[in-house]
Structures are given as structure tokens and as C-alpha cells.
Image (cartoon, rainbow over all chains, first blue to last red; front, top):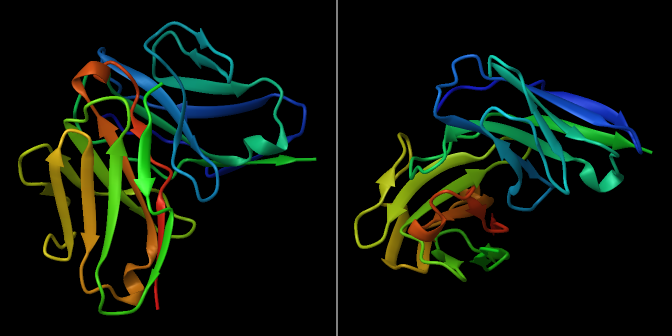
Length: 111
Length: 117
């Protein structure tokens, strides 16, 4: 799986958009970008994934650059419950390969 | 949607005893399960990969005789921490993968908090 780099921590004001960047410059053509988050003392929760087109679901939007070397997860209206560690992972979709987590970004949503 | 259930959610045991953690896939058959360990303020660290009916594959530095993994059925994998010591206190998380969900994201259990006194 390609390596990813994310900022260690970020703050966001409640009600504002949270934009979490991820660099994956060595991503392969068949690798998807996945985002998970982990709220304190819980298991990771899937958020969204994409290959090259921008994606949106009820939780977030995912913007992938045209060269696919980076992406941004957008939480459009952050709430206090969005405070969590966010992990960006790139991997082949139909794979049984192990998933290695990087340190992720610790997002603090501030009232 | 697919659900992965872990049990117990927390456990306290005395040093020297063994503890078993269960990971179940509730509505799909999990041919592969992953076990992670997480220390405070750190990321998830993969311990091992278990495939149904075969021996688990352990990551470097993880003692296979201490962390026994059994994946005897397509819906259940167990992690047994043998002769637990305080340094084994951690948050243990499992994840499951199945043929019916091979194109889906990984699903994770809610974790088990182990405290060894």
C-alpha cells in the first residue's frame, strides 16, 4: 500500500468546514483513497473513498487532485462530535492485504 | 450494513492470567480478520492477520505464543492474551474481510480495552 502523509493535528471552529489534507504521491493507478476516523476509545469508522473523481456522501466530501497525488477530506459543517483522529489510507479496493495505519490527523472541533 | 462485533468491550485481569477476546462478523462470512493493538495517543498497530482454517500471520515483533489467534469459523476469530502482564494493557481492535464484501471498505469492531493489574 502506498504511504500517506497527513498533518499531525488541526483545529476547526464548530459549524465551519474542516478540510483535512492527505499526500499520497506514490499512489498506483489501481489504488483507492480511503478515509476513516476514530473517535476516542472506539474502533475506526469508515467515512468515504474514491479513485479519481470527487465523491460525496452524507458524512463528507472527498476531493482528489487530477494527478491523484493528494486529496482532501471535507466535513462541511463540523460539530463537536467530529472531534477524532482521521486516517487517510490508499489501497487496492478488492484486496485482502493488510491495512497499515499511519499516525493520522487529530482534529479538534472547537466551540 | 456489515457489522463486526467484539466482546468484551473491556476487561480487567490479574497479571499472569489469560484473556480471550472475540471478534464476530454478524452478517457476512469473514475469510480474513485483522487484529490491531493501540496504545494511548498512538495509531493502530497491526498484530496479525488470520485466515479461516489456517494459521495466523504475525507481524514482526509480535509474539505468536503470547497472542494466540484462532479463526476456526467464517464468523469468529479469537485473540487470547496468554500470561498477561501490565505492559499488555492496551486497546485491541479487530477488522474483518469477506468475499461478499471484497469491494467494500474494511469494517472494524468497537475494540476491547484490556487492563492488566
